[in-house]
Image 1 (cartoon, rainbow, N blue to C red):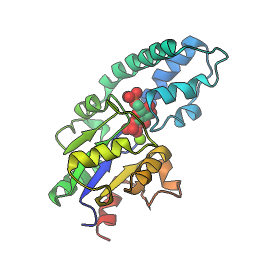
Image 2: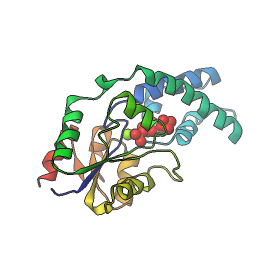
Image 3: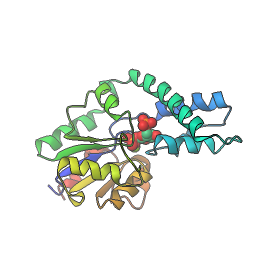
Image 4: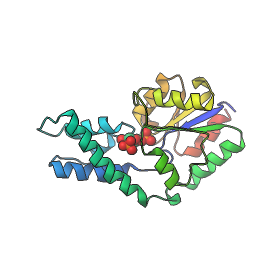
Length: 213
Ligand code: B16
Ligand code: MG
């Protein structure tokens, strides 16, 4: 195998929570009377909760204090966290499930590298909490993607060097984070069109072909 470990992003790679993020941000934006649409939501892909809020507030005429912003982020998260109850094992594709299984059978270590502070709850909802050797998420992070901290922590938990790990990401900020940390990267979805992505993949199982290079 070319890589000893694979670090997966969560939202946009393992499962899709972007619509639930959109609905929760939209509810907040409507309450604050701020214009918000799915195109703006796309810019929040892979971006931290506070950075996402700052993107939403670009359309606001009002300057809010840090305390108010913390309250808005908490308000959005309460709506989002509640909506995660809709998620189940059905939200993981056979392609993803089979790829994780195959990697384990080949002895490749697998980790999660997600900006989300709700990552653990999502893994439980989709029934994948047992599949990962390590979970690195948004809790306790000092810097978020495009900073490599979340992936460096994932590699450390796996006991592997960044150069021995492949990062799989759907967000440009995530590919930048992987490159900055010295990881090989595979871009899927929007990140497949990003020139800095080392490999460009259409579906998660395509990484099994990369590994055989
Ligand atoms: P939370 P990922 C990211 O997940 C989402 O793509 C992004 O939209 C969200 O703002 C971020 O997590 C933080 O999520 O509010 O749940 O802590 O793609 O890094 O798995
Ligand atoms: Mg993502």
